[in-house]
Length: 150
Length: 150
Image 1 (cartoon, rainbow over the protein chains, first blue to last red):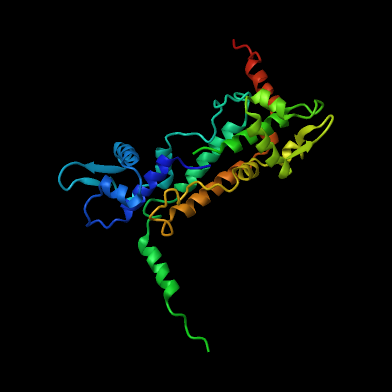
Image 2 (cartoon, each protein chain N blue to C red):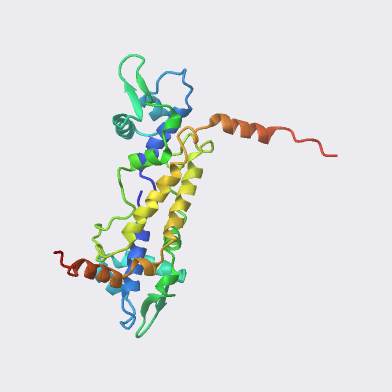
């Protein structure tokens, strides 16, 4: 069970942008391609989608580029994943066409389970999962000299 | 987000076998291939796996074939899906290697979300989702003449 590659790339882009200090220039596709090693082709599709859905704000021209449309704390992860997954269901009864289709309890409970997954993810925002300051704090804790034991 | 094809086939096989009247002969790979239009190659792998994990019981020889190892009501769907998915995680930080790997809150919450999905599915057993009798009951209810309204 894997998130779509489209979703994966979308989340990486958004996490990168939510961590990027605000005083730095807006992000470009080239920058994302260089940083992530993802092809421009893929990135353009994801960025376009996120821009169309008002998750990213794309400004053309000089000094232009990509920014988050709203602050990172407004984006629930469940909502982002649901959006990027574009209604893909966990199971495909048509490929190959299943003889039990139409008389099957599995599809309904898989839909319920997928909703449970999204609801879990909605407990967290883009800000929650992009906390470089927090991890530096943890890092400092791990590196601090412990009290001397006699 | 899709279940693995391996999981999909495993569930179809198990649902088929849990509905099959007990007095009929044990199920064969040929029968499954004919009924589902799935290649023997794929089926053998799934059946072998389910047999190794004591979900299916495979008897060789005359009158042999496949049966459920235990009754359908003992198999929780979450446990079956977890088994068939073989620990696959929702996201792969290595392909391509993500620059945020190791300093990222996403993986942890995706693991939590995946567990929430499995816990939801564990509310149901193979018996619950393979209820041809129930669907016939519902069908009868829908077809029963309503009381006459004056």
